[in-house]
Amino acid sequence: MSQIWQARFFTTANHLRELPNTQVPEIAFAGRSNAGKSTAINVLCNQKRLAFASKTPGRTQHINYFSIGGAHVGQHRKDVTRVDEIKGFLVDLPGYGYAEVSGSAKEHWQNLLGAYVQTRPQLAGLVLIIDSRRPFTDLDIQMLEWFAPTGRPVHCLLSKADKLNRNDSVNALRQAQTILASYVDENGQPFPFTAQLFSALKRTGLDEATQRLEDWLGLHDDDEDEEKPREQSEAEADVKQDAEKSPGERGVSPGQ
Ligand SMILES: Nc1nc2c(ncn2[C@@H]2O[C@H](COP(=O)(O)OP(=O)(O)OP(=O)(O)O)[C@@H](O)[C@H]2O)c(=O)[nH]1
Ligand SMILES: [Mg+2]
Image 1: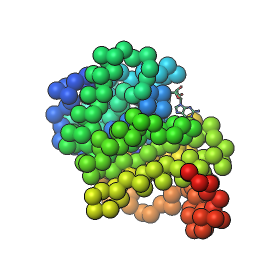
Image 2 (image 1 turned 60 degrees about the vertical axis):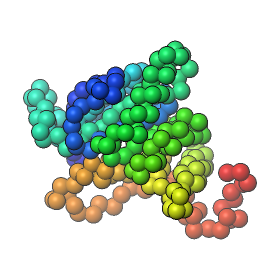
Image 3 (image 1 turned 90 degrees about the vertical axis):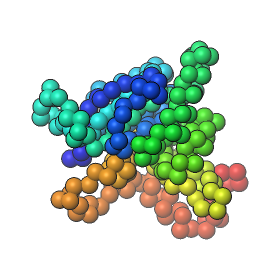
Image 4 (image 1 turned 135 degrees about the horizontal axis):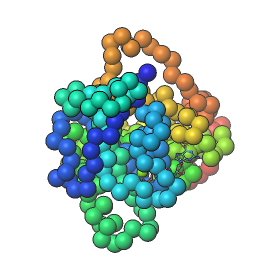
């Protein structure tokens, strides 16, 4: 059982000054509205309604913090969270790019999200949720560019992969990896940007994403250290096999 399953609602913030004054690492879930951020948090934490997910875009309106450690979910649901035992936080961010939001609210959120990802020292990494059926949008790129100078990692979950057939999901993953690999620093070194396919519905890619969160939060119990072979999705296997072929064999069309 992953320690991430112990997640509990901790606090909510609408302004930078309301962010908790804690020192433990936090991982933020960013992405377009309706991309599946809240749903991903729920599935990763093995809980149905920890974060509020909804068909209606714009569901998450505040920065919501979920604590890991400090409580044992499933055992004593009503015991208080022991703040000094919290090991890290998962942070659910409001989505961007939702057309119905009014101009001033949009500006408030753009500013808040920008300031949060650029200046929060506790932020250990960013999980960028991108609908696998849609390419990276300008705002996704903006998020990457805001965060890149921190030197910290970004892991993209290409969400709703259950809506794609095998071929299209292989292509979506390959395209995401190409975009991420195009980012290099002034010395030509790649940024620590990675991507995987993910489906909350089918639980595709859950092990890989969990592993990533545990790494970033430093959640490894000594007695849980036995190497467990990670499940590899069929699409991932295809991409790996493909990577060993020449570009011609791969059938990559120009512009991809
Ligand atoms: N088919 C499918 N649907 C999904 C998946 N993940 C999320 N959804 C659906 O997508 C919709 C939006 O999910 P949310 O998790 O609320 O999206 P969000 O990114 O938190 O959205 P905001 O809070 O508005 O920014 C919901 O109807 C979910 O059920 C998935 O893996 N597969
Ligand atoms: Mg949400």
